[in-house]
Structures are given as C-alpha cells and as structure tokens.
Length: 289
Ligand code: PMV
Image 1 (cartoon, rainbow, N blue to C red):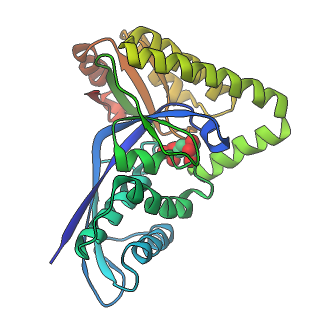
Image 2 (image 1 turned 90 degrees about the vertical axis):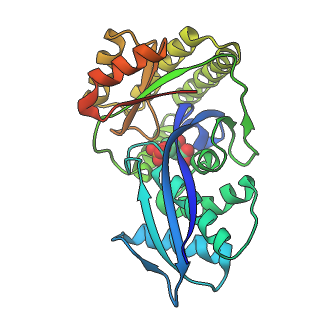
C-alpha cells in the first residue's frame, strides 16, 4: 500500500544568501508541489532514477522518521529542479510526510521542517533552513536561522509571476562564493547586509499594508545587491527588462541566483497573466497571494 506526502515550492522575496549568515529573510510558498509516495520494502528503493545526493538525503530522512523501516520511494514534481524554487526542500518535506503517514506517526509542520533540514544539508552543505520552513508551512514567512519562522499577515493581494532563466550552478557553490566575498571584503559585505535588512523592514511594512508598489521597488533594490554579489546573469536581466517594460512593479533573482528563476511582481492579476504570456519561452506562470 502506498502512502502520499506533499511539499510546496517557495520563492525568496528578500534576503537570500544574507539569511545563511544570520540576517532576516522573507519567503513565500508557491502553489507548485512535489508529491512523494512510499510503500514498505525490504531496503530503500526508488521507482525513478535518481542521483547520490537524493539517495543520501532520502536515507537520512527515512532514518529520522521511521528508524529501521524501509520504503520504496516514488516521486513526481511540478517544480523545476535546481532553479531556486526549492525543489529539494519540497522533496524532503513530502518524503518526511509520506513516511510518517506510512507508520501512522503524527508530525506538526515544525517537526517536518526540522527533519527536512537534515536532507537539505545533504543537498546544500550549509543551508539557512528557509526553504524547508517554507516547504513545510507555506504562506508568507519571516525567517531567521535557528529561530521559529513567523507568518506575515498580508494587507492585500499580491500578484506574482515566476520565470525560469534556465540552468544555474548548484546552490552550494553559490553560497560558498558569497561566503568567500563576506570573508574577503567584510566591510563591504556588512554595508550590504545593513542595506538588505532595511529592505526587509520596508518589504514587511509593504506586505502588511498591501502596498505592491513599494514592494516592487524593494525587490528591484534587492536585485541590485544580489547582482553586486555576482549572482545575476544576462538571461536574468533580460527577463527583468521584459517584465518591467510590460508593466511589472519589480523583478528579482530568487534563490541562489547564477541562473534559475526570476520573481516578478505585477500590479494586478490580469497584468500578471500578460507578463507570464510574454515570458512563455521561460516557462513563466502567475499566481496570487
Ligand atoms: O537553493 P535555492 O536556490 O532555492 O535557494 C537557497 C537560498 C539561499 O539563501 C541561497 C541558501 C539558503 O540556504 O538560504
């Protein structure tokens, strides 16, 4: 008998990379999911082909949830992998939930997020924990490493588009690149972190007031900081230009950068659909929070 678990994707609205070093970040759950099904088996087995990292993350999560009980694992995802929208975290969360269901164990979201973090460490080396928190809780969260995430109550509707610029380098590599920048240029990094924290404050105010215009400006400013860290690419900037010319309020790298997805804010649902249409070649889709 198969048991199913789900984990949702995420986009980082503000604070990627800075969250790894203890700053605040804001993330949003997105309505694309990964589904994992498990059934008892003599040893861990996969119904799909997968790499060593996925196998190791699976082993650790199953051990934490079910001890010595083993499973065959089946997975399907609507999220692009390695594109900054939290594929690995959504997998880890879905797997933890499916295994818990299979052995009749009840788990709160906080426990699911904590167990998924074990898998995230296999994929990303030194993750902040923001991806697994969002994959488990969904919604809009303010996050700081090592603390319980806080939900943000929105003062209005926000209309987003996500477009994929294509291949990106692994998160681990990009996190290491920013960590080297931080060590090599501590004063410059400090100034950027302060700027980022100010943007997080402005974004929180805007989210709580339902002020999409301010949020869009904050997203553009955030993209400038990420670009200064070397995380933008010509394709990312092309997507941003098309979106802004079409009337987007803001557009930014989301996640580790170096490729991957761009998060775009539109003034209304109709505009969001239009922008997604213009960015069809980048697998764009729109959604409202
Ligand atoms: O792995 P991605 O691209 O979904 O984003 C991870 C976000 C980072 O801040 C770059 C890393 C982290 O662990 O917070």
